[in-house]
Length: 114
Length: 115
Image 1 (cartoon, helix red, strand yellow):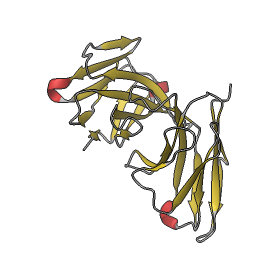
Image 2: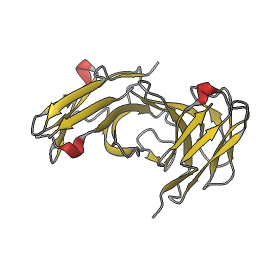
Image 3: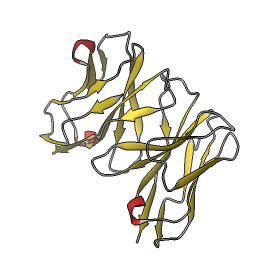
């Protein structure tokens, strides 16, 4: 009954280091999303995958890359971390790309870049 | 362009008070969907409700009620007889079927309910 699982939950990086955030879902959902949450700014979409085999940029993609490894897994990579990427990252899924579908969220990854 | 505005950054009430969280949205689409999500202090995001643009009926679920008014582009959320467990950040969100894979979130309203 895991739903959406994000790893790790916390991470501290130094500027310039790289890192991959992992997201796995057991809901058999087709669409997956990566958001970042910053104080006073709500959730902003970084990248999304409407279905297996496709990925597209969201509102704030610079500095990130993604991989939809299979239907279950969607990873987010920071190639060269910057302090501006300090944030809480959420992975979310939807059954499909339909606008009427609610999103199901993981518990988040709190990332600090020093 | 789509936009969701939650003008109230923080609200503080005393337990048992009623409180309304405001949400105003902008969209050019005729078919769209509005959502409310709750983020308690533990950090996870929980879906509360969805309304379709073609259904303006208000909805009540226990102490929670939602008032959807297309004429004012608002989708407000009222908690009646608030409880400490209602303390959370509440997000209003908007999506449609054309860009349906994108959901636009408001900045959130942080609600403090004091005992």
